[in-house]
Length: 321
Image 1 (tube, one colour):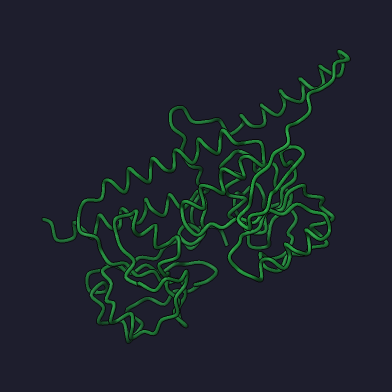
Image 2 (spheres, rainbow, N blue to C red):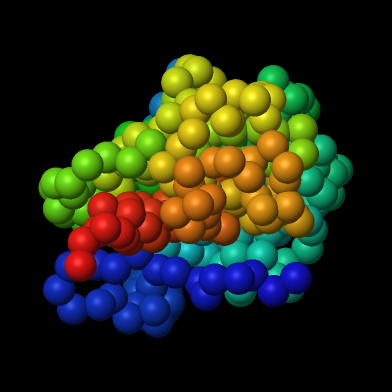
């Protein structure tokens, strides 16, 4: 299925950075090395890079990574945002972004990757998303066979920005990573400070039926707050299982339902008998949003705040002439 949104690059302040610039830099560096070799001079050694991942483990590379496999697709989006998508040597079966990785070999799923295939591709860095015990099984297997694996948590913007900066360090892109993070922080602050009206109570449907909603510990909840709203689900979990009766009790001002692998065919609210009395349905405040934009932490999380800010602004102005 074609992705519903075009590939988004995070804007940089001032003049945009040309997409060919990283490749040009690498070419110039290679030419310098070749020139040194021809002149008989010794080429400079690449610097060692070290970060601490979110397990508290030191990730040490003798030189910036040149062959990267991400076991969670959002890391590929981050690498592309840093201009380093050329480092990606494989993808998981669900990964579609950036488009340039479509032809890369598939190494299975996020939680069940083909470890033997990964070993055969000889990555110098593997990246995994933390937060689930199942995700650590392939990590332990790969580390036991000598691969370097970094595990990062990305459940809020603070963790996302930290991950971006550490991936920048590991791939020799630290200045670009700091620039991108600064740009995103500035844009989020601009959006947050522009919201001065009433804060609507928002419900985010992650899956239906067997209803799952975004809880307070999800990045979706932070997206709501930055966009000028508030998560009406107060339970402190990432995902919360709820009954239809609880949604009626909450009676949100805005209802968001995601469309994507977790919720492939969202049932329209008017077709749900229990939900016909919701005030958001009467007011027309029902919106379908892209799961990849709202629920997958990454550079596109900024776009989620932009989109929801516009929805909130429309709700705040719904009764104005």
